[in-house]
Image 1 (cartoon, rainbow, N blue to C red):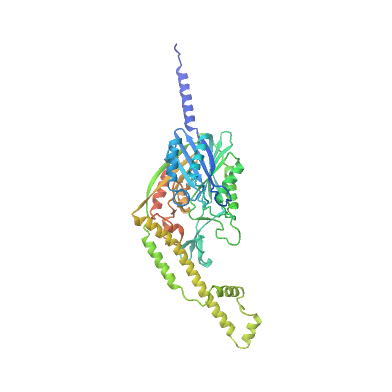
Image 2 (tube, rainbow, N blue to C red):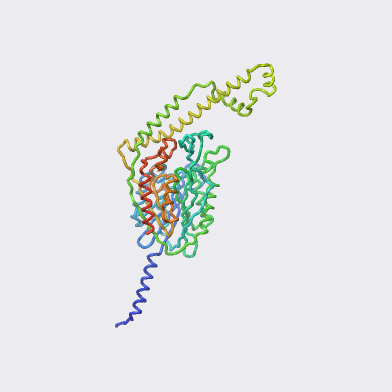
Length: 503
């Protein structure tokens, strides 16, 4: 039997097949899941999770995993073999290429379960099973209240940072503080019926505020994800992606007069994210693109910096002088002379009487006591400087010994890029400082470009070349493997990746 089809009918059929083919190619599927990874062998304040988002469009499948942990390898409970092990299983069991996977640590200092690897795989398998067609949208939220730059610029030009490991410099020496990034980058993924499936949100801040109980905690970003999920429903997963938080502390990180708690900060971040989520309109047929590159970055030779810090430490130690006071005599004198500047030792009438009698003993005693107080305080401030130097010098010496001096002149860094609709993010395995992220955002041709540190490995702090000129005064400049030239190389590659994602 023979069927005749008119030329016009053939054209209509061809157009129909083309439209159907394009619709199928553009269809985006997503699945999300989370699995508890809390170590319960000690007190627990709140739960830690591994959250997984699997994305599929045509022949491309990608996975984003966010983990409530300090790092992916390098330091903490998650070891260096975690990433290759999970990636190998992903490729074998789910067919997801290692280059299409992004694993981000929130950098909270909570303790993960010994079975974190198996539980992360469980989250990924569940997310894969949950694949459904989705619509996506992207936007930006703002949060200004929960973070502060921890780098303090002194009037001398030197920079120190705010850490628990050492004391703050005297207030009168501080001239300025560094920048913060107030943006919350948000990706919204909705089921076709409009019900939220997942929220990905990117923000820059060390989630290390802790909780009053001292129990195991996912800290600020654990509370923010919980807030988002509770507001959007139990079927929505909120994945926090840590940004350029290397030099960003929680607000009031050194507070001593009130309880420091991560929960109110997390609530604020979660609510600010929700405010942005509700303004985003999702659309179907959005593109999925993922890239991954390996960079060879120059490793730092810290020899000269170590020598300079050792010389500074010797100069400071040599400047310490003997003092008449000890701690027991200093404290009551400091209180007395701080409270009563004019008449510290006796009542005012006695001073007036002594003066009237021509006796100057009280004034001379006060002058001597004040001089002894100042001498003691100078030594304290000098010892505080030595403490900061010692702490950071140990970091430099350790990296020098295990890095450059052992023959390792370069370090490999995996840099990835992910685009989901209008949401574009580029990654780095180190603790990027805020200026790096601000530079990449400013140079990007796309407004909704975001940056994630702490991703696909861990290579310690990654400060700017300018910050590295600060010889050992801040942790970011000392707990560092990289030579200053790394910044230019990475920012150029990040820009290249962003442009590739937008093609």
